[in-house]
Length: 193
View 1: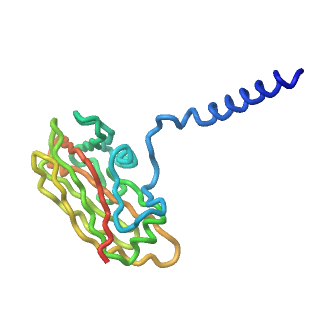
View 2: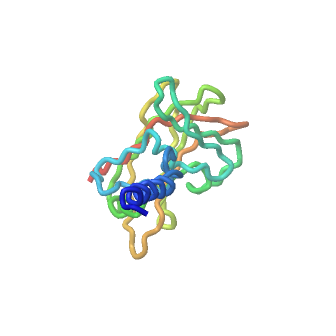
View 3: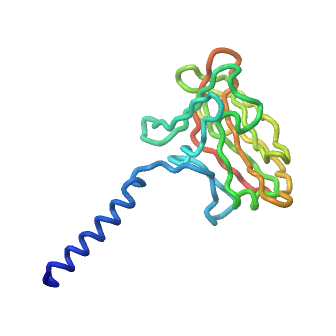
C-alpha cells in the first residue's frame, strides 16, 4: 500500500476510534459527588446541570427540568411517610473528599434557593448537612414562598479524625399528607471562618 493512502487511512481510523471512545459522554449530565475541583473553596455553588448530582434516595423523585428561560431547575417530589430520617434516605448528594477536608472543623453557611413546585407545591422544605457517624446539622425547616428565595443556615462541621467519612447534603419537601414537590435553583456552601 502506498504511503499517500496508508497515512490518511490510519489517521481516519485513529479519529474514528477516539470519537467512538468519547461518544457515550457527549451530552451526558454530570453525576457523582460534588467537588470543588481545586477552585476557590470559600464559595461552592451547585447549579445548572450540576443539580443532576442530587440523588433521589428513598422513594422520592428527582429530575432536572428547565424553566421558561432554558435554565436548569431541580424538581424534588416525595410522598408522605416514605423517606427515612437520615440524610441519605431521601434526596441528597455526597460531597467529595476535597470538600470534606476543606469544610472539616469550619463554620459554613448552606444556602438553598428554592420555591414550591407549580403542582403539588410544598409549603415547607427541610435541609440537613450530615457528616455521617460524626453528626449532622439537624433538619432545618423553612417556610416556602411563591417565588424563588434563598434559605440559609450555618453549621460548624465536626473535625474529621482518621479515615474520611461521607458528608451528605439533603433537601426534601415537608410532606404532611399525600405528596409534595419543590423546585431548587441553586445550592451554595460558603466558608465563614
